[in-house]
Amino acid sequence: MSKADFYETLGVLKGADEKELKVAYRKLAMQFHPDRNPGDATAEVRFKEINLAYEVLKDPQKRAAYDRFGHAAFEQGMAGGGGGPFGGGGGFADIFEDIFGDIMGGRRRQSGGRERGADLRYNMEITLEEAYSGRTAQIRVPSSITCTDCSGSGAKPGTQPVQCSMCHGAGRVRAAQGFFSIERTCPQCQGRGQTIKDPCAKCSGQGRVTEERALSVNIPAGIEDGTRIRLQGEGEAGYRSGPSGDLYIFLSVKPHEFFQRDGADLYCKAPISMTTAALGGQFEVATLDGTQTRVKVPEGTQNDRQFRLKGKGMPVLRQNQVGDLYIQVSVETPQSLSKRQRELLEEFEKLSSKENSPQSSGFLRRMKDFFESFGE
Image (cartoon, rainbow, N blue to C red):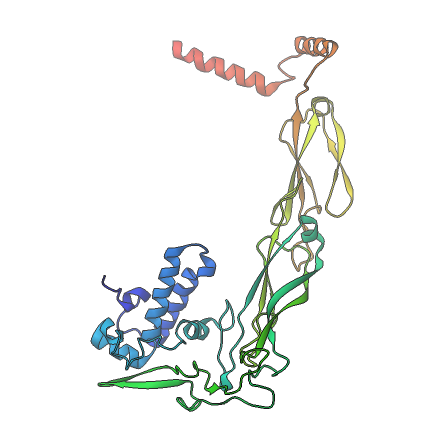
């Protein structure tokens, strides 16, 4: 099966400069990133194709080789035994880190073999009441932390990592082939520039161990469903004393028994009796601020009428504003009538006029006129 042209994959012309490539890559990578398309296999394949195309075209030497030989330039054997542009590691993580920095699990290698730890995700479910008032939550997160025996170096206490003999600390090696050379990650040190002769017994040379940690998470008042809270440096510990990643708390708000939320406003349905709707009256509703508010029902209230309680909705995140609460009444038809109740309703029906039920009377009149128009 033929492979897609790298320029077409990124949607750029063959003469595109470095800036155009970067802009095109950033836009497509954000669009098709697996985190934005969970469970979408097609998006995942597209994301890999975009990364591969950018990895080749952003490097002047690889781009020159591709422009001259096409995909054949990176088939097995053409890159001096490296197996293509991603031989020995590096590849996608390096590209993505160049564009997006520390977010979305990017790992950054630094001098001395240090590598940034991965970002972690924690899913937390809260109640609507907690979203209204805010809270401080205690969570336990299993993650990698810096090894205390070797202080994160990965080397046996009393020893130090040594410079890689293959790349001499550069982390990358070059392989010459004809008129060009291709640079790839050093296979001996995996791009870290250092190797460990005597690894730490506790962490096996990783510089980190897995442990469960207790953390406090501040949930501000007014937080919305789907909000992401970032705890900087609370992710996975970096490789060999590298900086730690971040921890992302993804919040979801449980459905409430009475209230539905729309931004800062709350909505609630309240049933009222037929007599209350006809004669007028009042009822009380409990609100999320812990108080009860009285709702006055005027005489002749119709089904689905909405009443607004100003300032009884949700607080707006980090703003001195509060939404409203909307109560929609549902007029309940009486059931299981006694004989006397039925007699009274029948008597009421006989005494009723068109003015008592203008909507139903008007509807029946219009329907009658509609059918009579067929006979004309």
